[in-house]
Every structure is written in structure tokens, then in C-alpha cells.
Image (cartoon, rainbow, N blue to C red; front, side, top):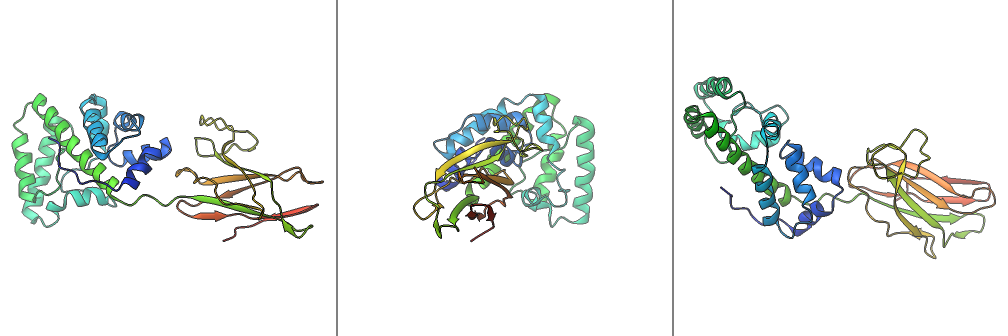
Length: 295
């Protein structure tokens, strides 16, 4: 049942092993919509190699109950009718792309007959199969018992999950979303060295609270912000080595412990875009400050 799988670039497997849980789950849901399958793969991290991840996928598919199978099937369109804007299914069903009107009509009727008999969409690992082969497989499986078809569906789902996982791991790792800052003391005319800088991200629910005053617990309760990293500006007033942000966040917050005569601290919140670098300098004076998007 397992299919040969090419090795994936280590950087992509490293990304999957280290991605925030929400980010990893979102990537897996694009492969298989059963939450228990995705949850099992995430809980098994880190994986020392691609083969171990694919084996974990096989095991998680084998453990799916009827609800999980139904959740997975619900995300698969009928053969010959991929959903608009679904490039994955269109690529996998390429064998039907050049089907004659007669073959397309026959597949439509067979799909309806299958759904009437088994109460679900016809699932097959369609990659590499011609339209005629898909039709013949669908016609043959109409003679299965419910038990036989259930096992066949599970086997085909495991093949699809393996192929999609392999494709995910073969693509380049997403670019990191990063933040840096630079503090200039405009009153003294020099960089502000030795200032503690705190980088925070919204709680796990992805949004800070309305007040934004909480320290954040990382529990997704909407209490505010979770501290992601703390650093101290160097002699040039810079923080260059702040760690990349989690891939799922859309906002970040910098808190500067400037301890000035008027401002004991400065806090700025800003929107971030995945894969971009965000340089946010602070221009500081005793009774005023400004921040801006730098380069």
C-alpha cells in the first residue's frame, strides 16, 4: 500500500517539526480534513525523517473512525468535478481533463450510483490514472459490499494523504516573518544602547484583546499578548537577532523599556505580513517619540 516517496528537503521537514501548532494543523488540513489525523501527526513531532512522518500518516489513517473518514471524504470532490479554485484536486484528477463528453456523462452517472449505494463520495487515488481507468475502477467498486468498500476507501485515503504530504514537504519552506528595531536618542544625538525590548504576539486565538493590556497566557483565551522574545539593544541601538514570528500571526507588539523622564516605556503595535521583514525603529526624545516602518 505505501507508495515510493522522494526525499524532501530537510529545511521543509524542519519547518514542519518546528512550526507553531496552529500553522502545522492548517497545513495538514489542506491534505486531509479529519482533525484526528492532523492532530496525531502534530502530536508526533519532531520526526527524524520523511519516512517516519509518512508512516505516522498511515497509522493515523488506519485509526480513523467513521466520523473521521466522513470528515476526510467531505473535503474531496467527485471524480470529474473538482471544485472551482481547487488546484490540488484538479491536478490529481488530470486524467479526466481531456475526457470526451460521453465519458464525462458516464462518470457523472456512475458517481450518482455510487453515492446512492454507499452514501458517500467515490474516493480513489487518481494521480496518474486515465479517465477510462477511473471509470473502470468506479464501475468495479459498485459491486463491493459496504465492508469491502470501507476498507478500499481507507486504503485510497492513505495513498492520497501520503502523496499530498510528500508534495508539501517537497516545496520550499515558507519565508520567515521577522522583526528588528533600532532606537535613536535624538536628544543626545546617539543610539540608545542597553534598552530592553520585548517582542510579543497575540494570544493563540490570533487576536489581542480589545484593551491589549494582558500579558497573554498562550492559551487562546483572548487575554492579550504573549511574550515571544526579549532582547537588549547593542551599542548601535539595534536588536537584530529577534527570532522569527510564528507563521500564523498577523500582528506584533514591541515594548521598549526606555525609562525616560516622561515615558517609562514605549509600546507600539503593528500589522505583519507573512514572509516579510519588518524593521520598526524608534526615535526617542525626553517628551516625544515616533516609530515608523523602516528598511
